Amino acid sequence: MTPSEVAERFRRFAAIECDRSPLYRRLAEGIAEDADLVALAGRTAPGQPVPNMLLAAAHDLLLGGLAHPLASFYPSLTPEPVAADPLPAFRDLCLSQQDAIEERLVTRRVQTNEVARCACFAPALALAGRDRPLALIDVGASAGLHLLWDRYGYEYSDGRRFGPAASGVGLRCELRGAERPALPDRVTVAARVGVDIHPVDVRDPQAARWLLALVWPDQPERAERVRAAMAVAVSDPPKLEAGNALDVLPAVMAEAPSEAEVCVLHCHTLNQFSPPDRQRFAAVLAGGGRPVTEVAIEWSAGEPAPRLSLTRYRGGRVREAILGTCDAHGEWLAWGLAPQ
Image (cartoon, rainbow, N blue to C red):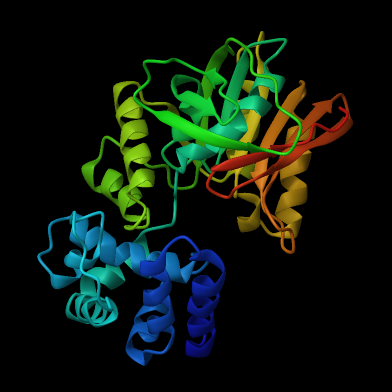
């Protein structure tokens, strides 16, 4: 990307994505007007969201123990953050630690696991698993924290609860609109496998810290959810397969227990696929030789919010149901069950 394109990425990021992060909005606005920071951000690996990468790289250095004045602006690092312009301190950190920042920009990837999205997934997975146990396969799994969805506790705004009450991960979700999803007593998960080009092992302290660095520092409740979910994963890590989903998914699907419903899960993943690869992905699901259910949260260009969908592949027939829309981070769900 040219410097002007990088700067525009930061302007759009500030205007569109930072409505709940005043800290990152100010930093992104300032970075867009700073030639040195734009040049540094431009070294991000191709295909990665540039603003997220630069901001996370700085956050990672601070979480790793770097003593720098920028830490005093981050609620994730101090109980009383400074109420002043953070840009000068951010600039100083990035330029004084340029080699360390660039190493992260080149080698790391944005692999968030926002476990609050599981509160939106849960009703869809309940539909997918109402007749048979589920063999879950998460595409773009990162650390596989979504695979552990049935080990989290849920509370919805209408007072209903789902999942183990004693779970260390408690998720709350606002239900919008008149319709309400059904919540079963339990869903049986027979197998769970994550597929990612670069899976994240949360037992690796540096890998776990990077997942926390990707969480915006003025949203500490999100960081606490990730920490709690990583603790669940450390105690019983899900199986993670490294590779391109288009290459490894057929074998992973074939290995699923015969008595289970193969359920392919993905969230904000298809935007990383080219149009031909999206077609190949659908063909893989349709051509697996057994019934497959796809549960997805994806956000298409021009739509006001991500869509929650459930698609069933049955002997050459494909039936998609748009179950509703939801918040990008799982804070609310507007359920509107379409005929299946």
